[in-house]
Image (cartoon, rainbow, N blue to C red):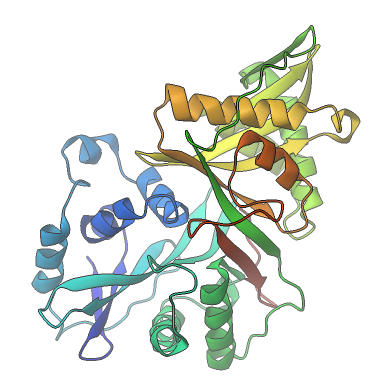
Amino acid sequence: MPGLHTTTQSTIIVQHDNAIDFLSCSYPTLRRYEASANIVLAHALKRVNAEAVLSGLLFTDDGDAEAYLKSLDRSSYSPHRNDDSFWLTLWSFTPGGRPVLDVVLSCLSWTLGNYPIFIWTPRRPGTIQSDWLGPRVTQLTEHLRMCVPPERVYSVFGMTQLVKTFAQRWTLLTGVDTDREPLYAAHFSYCDTSTFQPSDVRLPRGHELRRAKPRDLEDVARLCKEFADDTVFFPLTIERARIEARELIKKGQIWVYAANGDIATICAVTRNSQRVSAITKVYTTPAWRRHGCAEFLVREVTGRLLFDCNRDCVVLYVGHDNNAQRVYDRVGYAGLCGKDKSDRVEDSLELGFRGTHRGHW
């Protein structure tokens, strides 16, 4: 059952302990902002069974969300402990009483451990005032502290302004400082049919682009490990890399560039919703770098998602200092390599907290 926490006369926080409950009121807003909301929407959809989707449960509208919130008993709720997976939604109300979803916070786990805290708002960068954001994030951090121990919050990821505000409030509340350097600073970019750049360059003889197969397990696991080791903060043992590779292959979520039998590059697509897919991992093993493998593979995967799977757009995060920006720019991802950014290209940040139990994502 959801838990309701009244924060002021005009805002409330709802704690959702399962994905169906979270989506039953949040889906209309998440759907309207499906690209930027990918980090919270896709993770929730993974936890909803096919029967619920087919029954139309997810396809609620704003009226359903309003009825849902009005049905909650605001007088009998207190935040409750949850060390597993849950979502917090913070709502405000218009003068007419219509609920507006302001901020979503997710605290989730998966096969290889805990995810970071993901935080999202439908408001666009440059439109968020500190006197609007500060009190809301304070309310969320106070609620979160009553749900999990401080060591569970090993990092927070989302739009830069949101993350910095969360980290400041969390440190004030718990005394847990952030790491000196960000774990990840990235651009959130997108490619759609209007920006996609096809190419007529052919693959060398004996090379192919395809979904990974069970026989590729060891090679894919090795590249997953190399990718994780490159991040420094989230290394994997080969045993845990095999677990990740096996899951990606089984679900058809990872593509490979195969060069005369060698797996040179991997490309994972692990966050999907109705109209948006996210490329979540691209990695080329050192021996095959500077051969154009990543560009071939990213263009192939992006094109298939846009034109075969009819996605409205494909999204990804790319580090500020990552040379792969040039690859994504040539494929058609917007706002990279110093080019003009639309309001759909966000600056994103992950900040870690000292002395915590680090997970993996």
